Length: 334
Ligand code: LMR
Image (tube, rainbow, N blue to C red; front, top):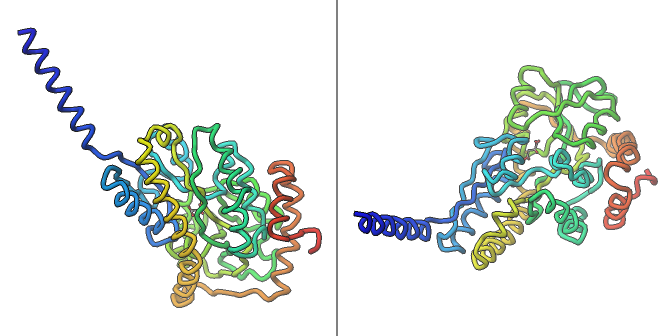
């Protein structure tokens, strides 16, 4: 009796070991934007390449559009190991205690994608990702989205047009200061709630790269969009460190290759996707798209540059200076 129980037990163990060996490693990749955005498409690309390169040893489950977690929850879920991979916007790392990421939120810090890439694809980017490790997080890559523009239900020609307006922002102290500096009232809100908040008037306006505005249909509830391009929005692809370090070495190497390819892909499609979505917004006729003149652009720059000084102690003067050195931007010369 005892022996047969032991045999049965051993057989069960053997069976579960086989089942374990055969069942794929699952990577849950959660994000908050639509599938047809730069991040959404890059996440699908990573899934495809990861599954191909590991020959099915890894299965990537992508959960788009906040279907699994919203902004704040997803960070907690990653640290607890409930999901393995995320790509939060760089504006969302402050609450985690890594304030340096908010440097990307400084107004006009980058004028173009090539300028930005000097930082994200170079040593400054690498040293920023390293700062995540004490939080149990590994930073694998930077993925682009694009440059943000202001929208509201009244025309925006000058910074004063946003005075007193309730503006939705991501959870970044730099963005909070950006809005306060022009006299607007910043309201931190999860991305999944923005459309409804705009529709019901809980907030008056917001700032977005066009791909996010269009795919969330915000242009249907914002009468005016001014192409200010006053700030950057992009992502860090991050994983739970314990999970990643615990992967078989060959699988990890294959996933690293998949991530490298996905990063090239993400950063190749981001601009096109935003340009394409801008055309769709214009075609929809639901919002008036305004291109500011050179002088109007300069007025926004001048109004927003005080944010640099105000945020220096939070982000670190050295970091800000090192980025200015890469890009050649000197806010003092405005
Ligand atoms: C936002 O909250 O506006 C963005 O961070 C959403 C995203 O992931 O692009």
